[in-house]
Image (tube, rainbow, N blue to C red; front, top):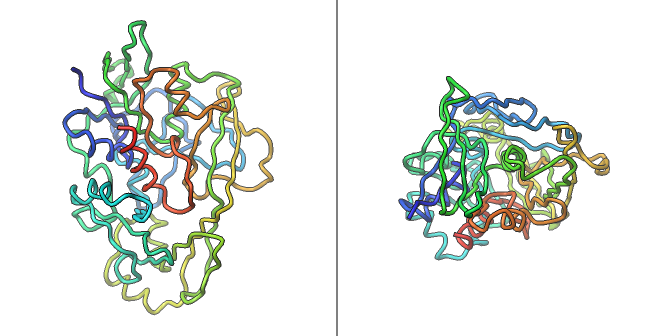
Length: 348
């Protein structure tokens, strides 16, 4: 029997790899692959972080909606904060991480440069001591970009990958009757469905997230109970903003004498935005109250024409499994990686 195929090397792809091991092949784009479609509208990089490209056929025409695409091994996990709510995950499921040399480090001002009233929130570290980079956990990544897929008459799935940066014709085609596990980001998922003709002009899409804000406050300030709070030391916050994924001891020592912190507030209020495809461009529907959407970077629960994307893919083929932010609806605000882990274990 064919091995399952995992597409994506971010946190979702890493979890799928940890669950399936040698029973699956992992495919993910790297810096050398340059697909035909390249739009800068969804690109997101940090000044000193690993540089990632964005390749989409769709053009970003969204106003007041911030969603992004990072085509790099590790995905968003190369620049994320690594926060994880261990209290939201059954103890036996946490062993999947711990048995893979992934540490759940309690938040502390000295070690992680962060703190939270919610003691269940921790930071994921790999054996190298820095914030977890999912690509370092995955073994034997096949460098390839999934250009499109098609369901054949016998129910098998035909996948078209691009392998090389030298020619758009250097492709790898695979036909499989095993599962296709799509562990790609929200933007890449939408564009993949469009490239594969499973998403069309005029289709209506919707995403949701919890309201989010960053405040500058004193270390001793006690927040209200209307939000999940993570406090970040000032210099640690600056390093994260620049894309640096570790916290040098000397910086930690200096931070102790700075009385201020950045306070991340994930409110219990949910926001939703709708958008559609017009002439190859993603455009917003309505004004959304004029407020920004996507600031939390935890936009999730994708719906297409009012249908959950899980059901939408299930109608295309029962052999397609979706993992990641697009496929989950957060029940409480804050870290989303824990929700992705629980969802993946349930599905796989």
